[in-house]
Amino acid sequence: MDFKYSREKMIREQIRARGVTNILVLNALLKVPRHLFVEESLRHRAYEDYPLPIGEGQTISQPYIVALMTEALKLKGGEKVLEIGTGSGYQTAILGEIAERVYSVERIPSLAKRAREILDSLGYKNISIKVGDGTYGWKEFSPYDGIIVTAGSPDIPPPLIEQLKDGGRLVIPVGDIFSQDLLVITKEKDKIKKENYGGVRFVKLIGEYGWRTD
Image (cartoon, rainbow, N blue to C red; front, side, top):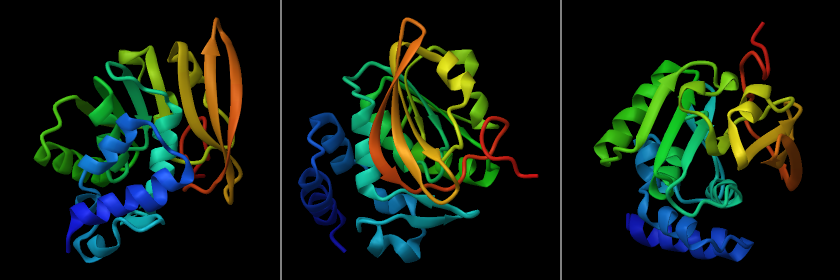
């Protein structure tokens, strides 16, 4: 299968056609081999316009949503970004192509391990991953220029607002367990402004400030 052609087709038909135009985002999507982040049996479907299972009840987001959320961060290069929910590592790699440093928190150890192995094999040196409750963020390296949450939350976790740099942007799906609104939060002098980028559907954000497991 010609994966480079599939990536080019994905960008042309799914990403650009739906309004994503940021050249840094488009170049990252063109470069990162999405098929390596899914099971071998699903690689022929890696560039199609829907999420795919990655094990442990989790998914790799559809390419358009990855592009939309990344563009919403308005990265220019040189930023420090926090990702909540490493998952397959694909969104992490896209961020790693643009930002100077990426810190990613994953709740499930097996997913974090697999993502780390794939990212290492692709040569990413600017990405750090830890296992833990992502709703607490990663305070050690805060504040962040951008924070992206790749799971649906019932509300905005307060630690993430606290760890966002003044002028920074937080992209997070907020809603119930069936559907969410993709919110973009801008922090300005300790006040927050919300923009709604439309309806999405993500797996649950599990944690102290997300959905509880008990």
